[in-house]
Amino acid sequence: MIIVLREGASSRETDGLMDFLTGLGGLSVHPVPGEEQTLWGVTGDTGRVDVSRIESFSCVERVLCATAPYPLASRASRPEGTRVQIGSVTVGGPRLAVIAGPCSVESREQILRTAQAVRRSGAAILRGGVLKPRSSPYAFQGMGLEGLALLKEAHEATGLPIVTELLSVRDFDRFIEEVDCVQVGARNMQNYELLRLLGKTDKPVLLKRGLSATLEEWLMSAEYILAGGNPNVILCERGIRTFETCTRNTLDLSAVPAVHHLSHLPVMVDPSHGTGRRWMVSPLARAAVAVGADGLIIEVHPDPEHALSDGAQSVDPAQFDELMRGLRAIAAAVGREL
Ligand code: PEP
Ligand code: MN
Image (cartoon, rainbow, N blue to C red):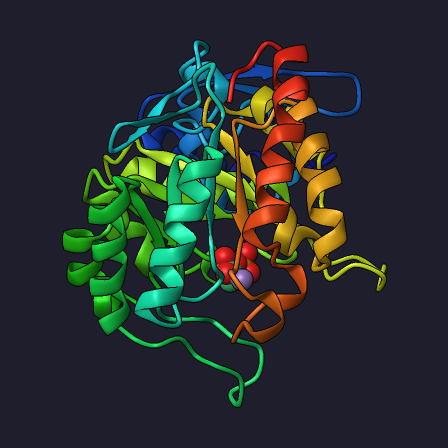
């Protein structure tokens, strides 16, 4: 870290900053006096320093950071990359992990039928929301916690591990007990209380990118879970808010190589929420695999026209089967298997 001191700063001011820095512990300060401006090089565990505290000193002009503010999530902390185990499925290895299932669990028949179908097509994990974060309070809010028993039944029938979204800390214990992987939705990416609780477990967490989150903000959220002691974090790019209105969100595929560069965590892509349009799901799933995603999460509904949520972006089982077939050649071309 380099601290650029304000020209003409008094020694009383800079002494105060020096006291603050040495008081943090584990840092060494190396002053580099210049003709006009003085720089302080700071070495040590700078990734854990709250830079805004330094910026608040009146003698500070600017702070330049060379290390990421997410030391545990950064690629440097685990150059070989991380693999996360969800039941018998490994995320982050040579085999792509495909999560598929309806946006919402709607009925026993719906989730069982979907689970059987996606398993036949090669999905490795079943998704299905029981508590839904909807933009409108009048829209279907999910069938509630009874849906967890239906997901369990679908798991028993197919062997597929379950991922479902935890909306609030209130239901934390139930989810830890009953699901294989906890999804933190885009709207909850910065629910730090929830992230901190998940950090105290070893439950795999699928951490979706916030609607307008930068990569740094997203990785800082992952850092909360890692800092609590839970290494099992999978990131999921699900589209971000831009000026474009043709698609529901703008799927930021550049996030995949960027995250792989910045972090050791596996990253999945959600082309369903990323586009909002059924006919775009397959082409963007192919693009996601080509760009190096470690897996996909795709909404599949047996009757998308009558889905209670996100029908417009849901594919039916036949379309999902075709999508999976199309992915194989692309996976092989980038050295992955399906
Ligand atoms: C979902 O997976 O159904 C969902 C609500 O996703 P997101 O949090 O990405 O909007
Ligand atoms: Mn959805």
